[in-house]
Image (cartoon, rainbow, N blue to C red; front, top):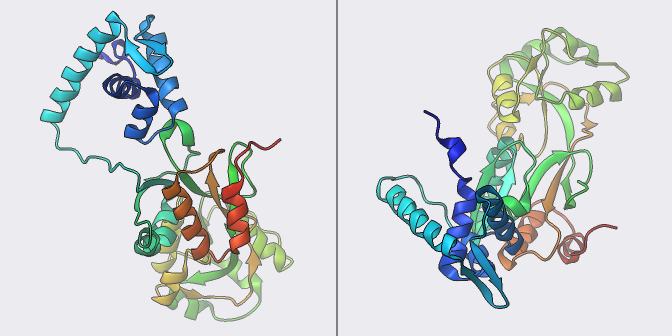
Length: 310
């Protein structure tokens, strides 16, 4: 039998228990690495689900209602039972922990080679990667920064362009040798590999005066990691997207097939929520921007802007 419909959302219980234990939404937010607003909304969501109030809001913190006291007892019993019978990994928390959301390809090909450098320094940081394609809700999920691929700044967050991509065709050394040099049209005789967005190939062929539309013989993979792997295994021609493809090129798993380059209409962006960042998140944003080669003035403007766009 499915009992999930009879259970309140677990995130709301987590926020409720922390607020009850610490006596305030602010202290609960600090303990859970969330914002005050996120904790407040989770508690309100729980109260709406229950149809009763679990807290009395006071000038200096919160206190439990009788119903809240009963719920706290049951919640802590349930959490203790889960803790006693679970060996799952515990998420790192604390002032030095910075949560970063990014697509798998960015995590594996750009962040991971730089992770030790990004965590080192003063202050020392602990980076927790939230690997996903979807658009993250900073406040609700307690995420500090996001890196994404896109065509412009997002309307509901502050965005800083990290870098653009000048793309060029690559393949396995064996396939590249077989293709040889020549006119760009020769590449159309091969299977072309792309991720969920073929905009890069369209831009590259357009720069050569050619029109390209994905064909049945072309291969599509949802993540750029798989695009590079497919090219390295001789399944067709892919577009190198520096700096994501830099290590693969250096190892000669893939090599250039054509010297012509084109600007990909998709760029990489560093996103953050409105308002002041926590010191550790601001430090990481500075280090990411430095690794991307941005001018310090651009970074400072990004960090110092706190108000919502008009």
